Length: 633
Image (cartoon, rainbow, N blue to C red; front, side, top):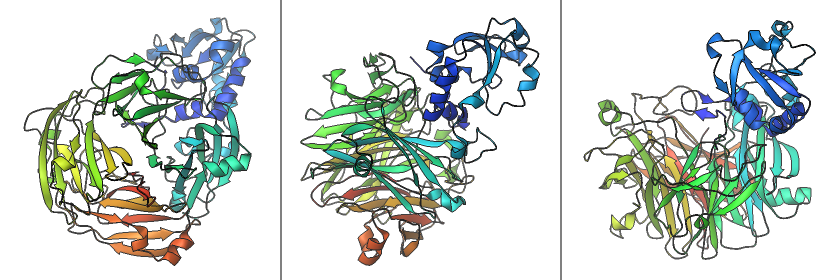
């Protein structure tokens, strides 16, 4: 069952009304409002009755909707929230005890309704469900995206595994003066475990929330749930970006990291691997709303099979449920992949792979419902060169195996024409491999060991997936893949997934090359590299992908900041066009400077000459490591 909400699309961006209605504090006020409405007529000037009824837990139980009324004559007869809209002129004949104006900042609307209220009806507005004014970055315009910079975090501290959120006050670089984080921690049952606020550094400093510290701070028992984070007082960006480490608190071998900048529920998510014969894959289902998810409202499907299997669990508001995918697909194994039909109930879910006493966490990705094949991609302007590229590291092959599995990431995608280009760190092309025209339901995984001699790339390099139409096929520009990295000795693994972009071209195409700030082409870089923690050392691989020839060598600065945002030291590196570099902070900064930066410090990878792409992680020195793509701001 699909929630009747509009969240995000790549044309219009995010739907702020959805954020305003789904905010946990707003949901509590909406529920209280619904209790007093009785039989209610809804005036819907902004078309949000559907999400209002879907997200408010009280309407089904406490308020009987008499009708939905609109002022736009062309909107009469539409279905909103399961009700056929009526003309506002007919509101006086409603059999309602109250009228709700489904709009915020609605004072200007109220005078025109004075003569239209049914006899004795009380008048209410959504202003009664606003979050507190002290939490508004822009108090003059409630539905400003900056007022709802929110995200969810998979947060766990169960005595075996702990989680650690790391980010930075990147809003300070856009003029923000006093950023703070409002946090709500929910337990597995959706129960509220703790609520607090933390001030961000006054400058562009690092910020860390460790579940072990939170647990001690509030005297909590073991928990596995989710953390709701709302950044207040921000500027420039309305997205809360973070890296999340999962580490063994009991000195075990597990270690992984993932990042998230996507705070929007989706119809479907893709990129969920089936387990190997010796693995267990657990999908963590975390309800992002104040209304329960009914049994069977979500489903898992083998990618391309179109025979979804309903998930029988009901999930209470803000609750967390653990699903072993083998309970629904007992005979399905890697390299098969699964699709989650989430019905817009969840922000991007995590999955956990358990094998040989080690676990690793990764995330699935939003599967686009709005994207069709683009007939222009096979014939892009010559200045766009190789067009859309999906770069990924090849970790030092003396220690690691690197595998890649393309993953369909649009509902309409039925086949994908692909090849793989492999590059040395100096930017020279080492090899190429035509993968072919992959159907939606495929079990293809490319092991770089099958393509390269064992003495090739002993210190690593990178590869790029790209479209190749020699065997026909279609493309949509939303090329994704899952990358898996395995330690040859310990067996520890990490995996990450990401999508393609056009990189480093002067000409643009449909918003590509993307830019972190301003209009494309995005020919500059600001990537966040967290430092190590609890004896684990951080590292990253920075790739300089180029769809067409660009600057021969990058002019990349590594800026080391402390927890307060003070710049401590700068180092420079040059990366060859189409090349890559593996960076370990201790090779570029002194032990004194790294100690001064502290575990909440970070490195900002900056370049004004080209757009770089990176993957980061930490190494425990004992065969365990984490690895996921970096984020920028």
